[in-house]
Amino acid sequence: MSLSEHATSAMDAPRDTVLTVQEASVRYGATTVLKDLSLSLNRGEFVCVIGPSGSGKTTLLRLLAGLLTPVSGSVDFRGQPHRAPSRDIAIVFQDYTNALLPWRDAEGNVSLALEAAGVPRAERRDQIHALLRTVGLVGSEGKFPAEMSGGMQQRLQIARCLAQKPDVLLMDEPFGALDAMTRQKLQDELLGIVAESQVTAFFVTHDLEEAIYLGDRIIALEPNPGRVSQIFDVPLPKPRNQLTTREMPEFLRLRRQLFDFIERYEQ
Ligand SMILES: Nc1ncnc2c1ncn2[C@@H]1O[C@H](COP(=O)(O)OP(=O)(O)OP(=O)(O)O)[C@@H](O)[C@H]1O
Image (tube, rainbow, N blue to C red; front, side, top):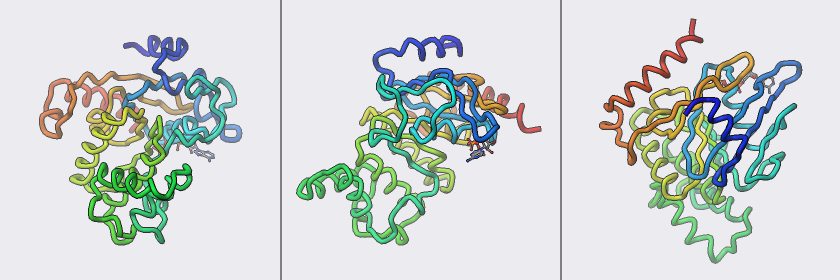
């Protein structure tokens, strides 16, 4: 699908569209960081965002989170103007250390989100255990963040976000600080979670292969000012496999296209 067709579909707002950005511009002081950006995210879709440093990836995520207001254009969430953070949109940060409460164990960290949602105490325990099972943390319920590896802490942060039962999961380089093996394991777990929960995933990454492996679509931002340069559809079959998917001709073709795109900005 071409960029113009995507822009059109954002304007038409099909029924399963969860978040729609229309011609939005964002400024920090006198600097325009995002300009006339249009984008739509559909229910259950996995959208990755790539682009050179400073192209506005995090700013776009903050706009979708309702943490920023555009100076022009609009953002709609489930068909309504989106002007403030919502419990139905959860954010997973790269820096899991600061995202977790160090004085609460794994159970306690997940419980926090359930407490905030008003889930009665009697129901919390079962939900906490189900969430910890989903992210592969059975047996670590009583561990404190400082007693967990980076991968485990990031799993816990994801569990806490899932406890909100969000419609949208915004992720800002969530696996950037993890080693390669842990990263691949978490990529597969995340794909499983998104497929099962039908949450809409929006995933910022510097890792072009990660974007292809995870995404249904990849949005490439270009800088000065930040705007959508290209949208790549990823027609790779699911479930994906760390070995076979990465060897597919389509994967390699997209990899080449994304590297060619990013190389333009790396002189
Ligand atoms: N709070 C802020 N005040 C002023 N300028 C900002 C602020 N946050 C970001 N910027 C600027 O906005 C532009 C886009 O920043 P942003 O962090 O969204 O880019 P990015 O693509 O996520 O970058 P990176 O890949 O390096 O994380 C950059 O030029 C940055 O310097």
